[in-house]
Image (cartoon, rainbow, N blue to C red; front, side, top):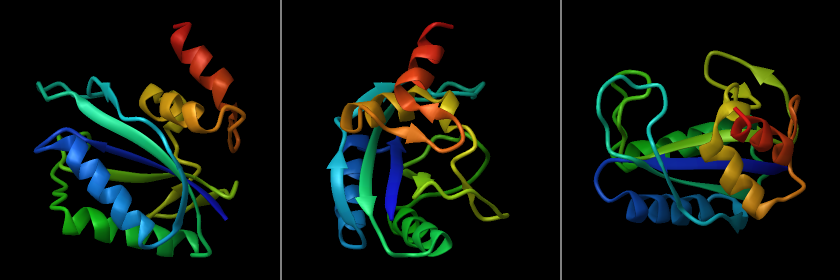
Length: 151
């Protein structure tokens, strides 16, 4: 099943941490595409934080959605991810954006990611590696990104 996964970091050495996380993901699923790294300003935070480094990868996996999420959470934990409050600065953040077009809502995971269609830092790198990509329930990522940039 196709997995679209977003990565971000703004503490420590974000470029190295994202690269390390991608390597660890490669050990678990078949990664088929990885975007370039982009730098973005933090979203939805009142306190001053360093800019983020973000990337998106596309992979193939046979794992069930919650099992894939557990694999990604384990990678975050091994890399020192500490969850203090929503949108806090972080050493690594790994999110499943879309997984085989599945729709799912549970306390642990919502698919597709509920705010991906509003996040330039997800859509722009995704568009780079999949120009015809679509976010389930929202449509072509090219159009979603154009809508954001028109605002």
